[in-house]
Structures are given as structure tokens and as C-alpha cells.
Image 1 (cartoon, protein in one colour):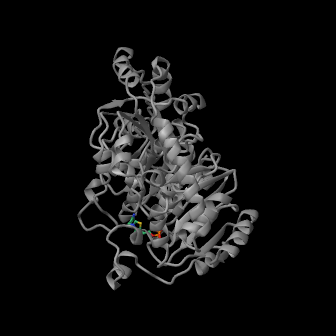
Image 2: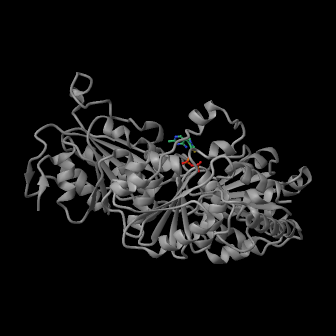
Image 3: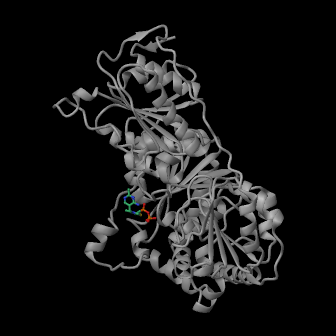
Length: 553
Ligand SMILES: Cc1ncc(C[n+]2csc(CCOP(=O)(O)OP(=O)(O)O)c2C)c(N)n1
């Protein structure tokens, strides 16, 4: 066995191993050589080499998004580390465990004019669950710090930073370990809800005729089918799900904007809930957020084992629990109450569906049409990764096969790592992965394709509307040169040369007929990763979408 000679590097690697960490994403550098040598020479780890740290961090995020276990990132000193920040922040808000290990020079060498040095300690402070600032010499204190950081990433599901100073020589190896590491167990506390406290809330539930459950980003298969059925069969309960909720029932309202955008004041008054219950992560729909901020519920309960954001300015209770556990404890005590809440909204859903289908049949080739066709034809057993921002918003308007799992970086809603994340997820999950992305997001993260681990069946559906289409949809859009240059960032670039350079199969579609044939060919081919680039009419897309909302009534 080969170990790095530097004992601190040995300790870090041994503790990672003892904690069950498997995946290590390494970016090149010299200062981190002791870690690179140690991780790569230990066959227990899967080591990935990715040069661009921003992409490396999103790739790691994609792996951790799927495995729900911490992934380690290793980089050299200097600005390398700062390039992890976008994914680090995304991990923080999306509750995904990441462990950043940065190599550093000893503190005496910082800010004295040495090369490739910056102030690395606590550099992610604002979004880090733990900062372990190690010292060069091996000590129980150092071991404890490493343990605390890793345990925190596991238990509190988020990003942590370990900064490790190494002095030269950096490349020497030994054949036996010099350290005997200290391991601190994970102390997981299972939260059981206090029953006496629960009864106060059960009595509110049992006397409320309008209960709205809103589910944000949620991992697939997190909620028991029995709970889903109980909620779906309660006349006083309306469940609204976002596409990233991965939660399905035919009676749930899965297209929130389609339902509520055309509502009159009277309909909003009716929708205003007595109790709002939320669980899951970020909510995409701006309209539901605006509605709930204006039409405040009497009670807002959020269920989450770790965090509760007061998204609507009226949070009244945080149940510190896993949603399945909460409902298993809570629902047996609830009693039915007469209510037309669910029936009325189900009626709206039926009407909207008719109008939606009529409209979809009529419209010309556009972003809307593309999403209609693409979502309807996705292979049943695929994993869907979505880019920001109009991509996820369009996707929310269409019925999706419940077997398809959906993910999107909505922690910070960045466009800077959707492709890298999708590739990481594809590596970690054996399902065929399909990324739907806009052109600006795709071009931004094109270094994601500089990756030798991309599975052969990985597919990108690139909707090229010539710029940031979202800005045409948002209020404030005016067709001026300033808009085109500074908001839309309009361009005439395509993915063709990138596809060629990175060994992707490449095809294009620019009307409905060749979209259908191109999609069939895309799904059938699994010998090479592919990009299907779909060109849509820049100037017509927003009116097709805005008219959709007008035609729903
Ligand atoms: C890192 C980052 N920079 C800027 C933004 C602001 N932003 C949101 S959407 C968007 C344009 C996205 O355009 P594109 O990828 O073409 O998708 P489309 O909206 O056309 O679907 C921008 C610049 C962001 N979300 N993240």
C-alpha cells in the first residue's frame, strides 16, 4: 500500500475511509499532492479527476444528490478553492452533503507574497455547516475537527470545509501508516414529536375545512403510498405539488401555475387555506408564493427534520421531523370534516386540462411546443435533470410520467452548474439521464463536457432560443438593444463544435416534424452521449406562453 508521507494527509484519508466515504473528486495541483496520492492509491475510493473546480464541485453535487452521502472534493491552494463556491452554496440551500478539503500553505506563509496563496480559512463561512481549520502537526485536536466536519455533513446534510496546510516536500510516499486516528461516532437524534403538543395541532386540523399542502423539492420515494392515499382522499385537503417534488397522485394539483394564474379575487378567496402545510425544499412557482404572501393562511406548519424557512411570512410551527414520520404520527388522530375544498379545485383541474390540450394543439413551433412534445415522449425509466430558469418553469406546466425522477438546482437557482450536476447524477445513478437545458446555461457550463466519466446513454436536450428566454417572460421586458445585449444576452452560437470537440453525437431540430423523429433517434441511441439542439423562434416564445395563461379560462 502507498501512503503520502505527510501524517496530516494520512489522517484525513483514514478518517474519510472510516466514515464510509467513497467518492472523491480531485482537481489538479501540487499543494494537494499528498491527498491526491493518498486517495488515488487506496482502491476503496472512487476517484474522479476534473480540472475545472467549478465543474468538479457541481459534478460532486450531482453524485451526492443521488447517493445522499457526502462526496469529497480535493483542490489545491489559491483561487482553485473559490471556484467551489457556487456548488457549495447550492449544496447549502438544497441540503446536499459535500466535504471540501483544500490544501493550503502553513498560516505563516499567507499574505507574505508567496505564490498561489489566499486567505483560505473560513472562506465559505456564510454557507458552511462547519469549518475545520487544521494545523500542520498531527494531533487529536485535528482528528476531532476532521470528524466534526464529516459528521456534520452526514447528519445536517450540507457542505463543510476542511482546510489542510501542507509544507513541501509534497510528493513523498511511505508504505506504512504513521498515524492512529481518532474516530468520533455520528450522533444522530431521531426526533419524535411530543404527543401532548401534537394534540393541540390535531384539534386545529380537525376543525379546519380548508387545508392546503404544498410540496417543494423532494427526493423520490420519500413519502409512503399510504400517506399519499390518505391525503388524497380527504375532502378538506388540497395537495399542490411541484415538478421537483417527485410526488404523484391523480388527484394532486401538479401544475400550480396552470391552476391559479387565471384566478379571480373570488377564487383566490376560496383557495385561501385555514392551514398551510409545507414540506420539501424550495418552491419554484412564483405565483403560489405571491398568493400565499397576500392571502395568508391562519396557520402555516412546515415539516422538516432540519430547517424551516418562513417563505410566506406567516410560519406558525416548525415540526422538526421527517414528513413520513410526522404524518404517520399525526394522521391516525385526524377526523373527517365536511368540505368542498378539494372538489372545487379538482373541478378547476379538469377544466384547465381541456383548455390546456386545446391550446397545445393549436400553437406553432415554440418553446412551449417543444416542452409539450419532449415531456410527453420521455422514456419511462429515465432520470430528468432540468436547467434554470424557464426550463423548470415550462416543465411545471406539463404532466410528467410519475416514474420519472426529477432534479434541478433550485437551492440557489444558478445557471452555472446544471450540466455538471446532471453528469454527476448520471454517473451515480445507472438510469438513463436526460438533461433539458437552455442555451445560456448550457454555454455557461460547457466545461462540464470536459469529463471522461460521462455515461454513453447521457443525453442533453438543448432548447436554443437564442438567449436567456426567461427575461422575455418576466415583467419588464421591452424589445430594445439594451434588453437584447444586457438581459437576454442574445447570440448566434450553437453546440455543434462543442459536441464535436467532446465526442458527443449531435443532431438538430427546428420544426415539429423533425423534432419527433430527432427525439425518437435520441432515445434509441445509447452508444455515445448525445446533444439534441432544438432551435425555437426567439421573438415568438413569450407570446405563446403568455397567451397560454389567457386561454385557460
Ligand atoms: C450563475 C447565474 N448567473 C445569472 C443568473 C440569472 N439568470 C437566470 S436565468 C438566466 C438565463 C438563462 O437562459 P437559458 O439558459 O438560455 O435558459 P432560458 O431562460 O432561455 O430557458 C440568467 C442569466 C443565474 N440564475 N445564475
